[in-house]
Image (tube, rainbow, N blue to C red):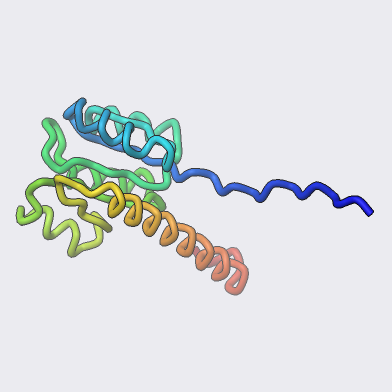
Amino acid sequence: MSKRPSSPPSVPPKPSLLVVDDEPANLKTFQRVFRRDFLMTPCASAKEALAALRHDNFDVIIADQSMPELSGVELLRLVVVAAPQMRRAMCTGYPDLPEVIEAQRSGLAQIVIMKPWNADEVRRWIHHLVKLGTMHDAVAKLRQSVDGPERK
């Protein structure tokens, strides 16, 4: 009796990240370190990130706090309106800034990644955020099935 070839296990899709940093070297490093783990769209400005949001959906945004034009906090405020389902992280070398503390306390930034960051730690945090998003979606669908279409 011959054995049937087993089908390959389904591989879950890689989480999609919108990475925003005005320093090209930081974007390149992030891409090089995480290219096997995530689908990344790098953006060199908040304006570029907002344009990307109009065309694509992302699981997680990681925004640098210190950028010209719009800070990371200001960008995340716009992201909450444009894509409320997206998980939000901020990357900063200045975690003691009042606006960064308030962004994390309020949930605007669900994670604050300290510079210099540790790759394994960043991987864990991103996967954690993706799982939170999946659970949030599952709870919303369950509520919808229990309560009917009138509740959102």
